[in-house]
Structures are given as C-alpha cells and as structure tokens.
Amino acid sequence: MGGDNAPASVIDGADIAKAQAPHIEFIFVGDESRVRPLLVQTRHLQNAEILHTDVAVAAGDTASHAVRRGRDSSMWVAIAQVADKKADAVVSAGNTGALMAMSKLQLRTMPGVTRPAIAGFFPTEQKRMCMLDLGANLECDEDNLVQFALMGQAFYHSLVGKENPSVALLNVGSEEQKGHEYLRLAAQELSDKQLGVNYIGFVEGSDLVKGGVDIVVTDGFSGNIALKTAEGVAGLFATLLRRCFKASLPAKLGYLLARGALKNFRTKMDPRRYNGAVFLGLNGIAVKSHGGTDAVGFANAIDVAMNLVGHGFIPDVSSAIEKADRMRAKRKNVNE
Image (cartoon, rainbow, N blue to C red):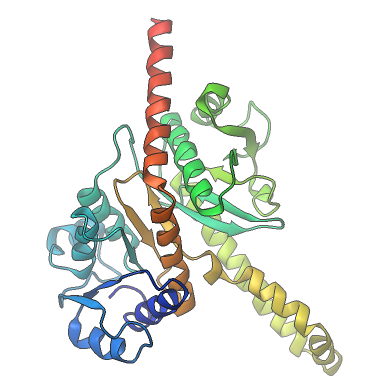
C-alpha cells in the first residue's frame, strides 16, 4: 500500500516479475477490497495470496509514530512474514524511515553489526556502482564505515557476481591526509589485506560518475545528498535536452536523426533500472523501492530481492563481519 502509485504499481510490477521468473510466489499485504480487483486483471497473479489489513503507514508519518501505531499496518505485517520465515524477502515502496525502523525491530541486526545501512546502485560511465549508506545513518564512525564496506562487498558480489569488487571511501579529496579523522582511521583498517577488502583509497564527488570503483562507502548524510543530487542532475539534463530539441526546426530534424542513439541513452540512464535499495546488516532481506516508481521500477526492486535470496547474501555478510571482529579482537590483544 506504500508509494505514490500504490497498489497498482506494486501489483503490475509483481506481474512483470512473475512473467520473468514464474517460480516466485507473492503475498500481497494490504486492503483486499483494493488489491483483489487489481489482481484479477493481471495475467499471472489472479490467485495470489492476500493478507488483509486496512491500516497503512502514511508517507508523512515519522518512524516513531509508525512503529507505535502501525503494528496492524500493511508494512509491519509484510515484514513479519520475513521475520516468521513465511517469506524470503519484503519489498515496499512506502515510507523509508518507517520501513527501516520496523525492519530493524522485527528482523534484528546481524551479530556484530552496529548499524544497518541502505545500499543502492548508480549509473556511471563504465558500469553500475554501489553506494552505501544512502540515508540510514546521518553520523558514522570508523567502525561503521568498515562494516559498510564489508556488507557492500557481499551485496555487490551477490547482485553483480564480481569476485573481489573494489571499494573506496567518499572524501573531500583523494590525498591520505584529507577528511575527518574517522575517515582516515577507516581507511587504515580497510587497507589491511587480511580483512579481505579490495580497498583502493579515497574518491571525491566528481569521481562517482566515472565508474572507476565498484563500491563507494560513506555516511548516510553525504550518501543521501549524493543520491538526491545525482537524481536532480539527471532530471535537469533530460529537461534541457528536450528543450534544445524543440527549440527550432533544425533541432527537431536533428532529434529524428539521433533518435536511436537517444533511445539507447535514455535506457542506460533510466532510474527504474537502478530501483531497489537494500537494508544491509539485518537478519532478513528488506528492499526499498522508490516511492514514485512505476511497475517497471517495482519489478526491478523485486528482482533485487530475488537475486539476494538466490545468492546466499546474508550468510556472506555474516561471515565477513565475524572475520572482521576476530581481527579487531586479535589486534586489541596484541596492543594490550
């Protein structure tokens, strides 16, 4: 029931995902009087299961308000299916803060994880790039950033399949002496080869779109600003491009000649292809879809959840965190 176009975009997106992966089974949580008529109109979901509740978290609800009064909400009940092992993953386009708070309460954090993080993908000049945290933690220390790097590495490997993906820290400069002390301390720990992280150093904001690194780690404050700035710039570019091609008859003719190339460009930059951010560090898979996405975007968020389930993502993260904790304990004993 969450998102600007719910429940239609959710159901249509699930129908697209079901057509591409017939083995997926869905449980729709929400107002049955609104959900059932839409399911009947789909090609693949007419008999899908519905868990009825007419309570839904509003977009403007604070996380604390949603948790206190939302135990019967569609969001809470959906997450509970994962917590109770009745579902493998939850996907929602609803209130981000509420989804994070409810997921953390019900799914709990993995042993050793201090804070969950939100991870998602960006388009770049060369390939998809993963960034975390995108807004779950506005303030972080070096331990948080190291854990984000470990979780991001397992996340990237699960979805992209690349062994030993590269990791960088977002900073105000690439020089080792730049940035806050906690960034330099995190860099020092990530540089330890025994940790198993392919750390390549600091990157600046201008490096994000170049595609020279697979995973960029930062605090949620900087990460969310980078994400929203990238979305804004992409929208600005598309608007200006449309204006330019409508400006004159020669420009319109130029559009006709370049239409094929522009279509390819639009496909590569389509935000729906990158929809589906993941809450990393929890004992369960929770995927956040953009609230304003359509059916195609929501289908992509479902695909993210399906890939994480299929690739054993949670055990990979857990083992990486355990290894890091053992190394920290060993260093502490040596120093003492």
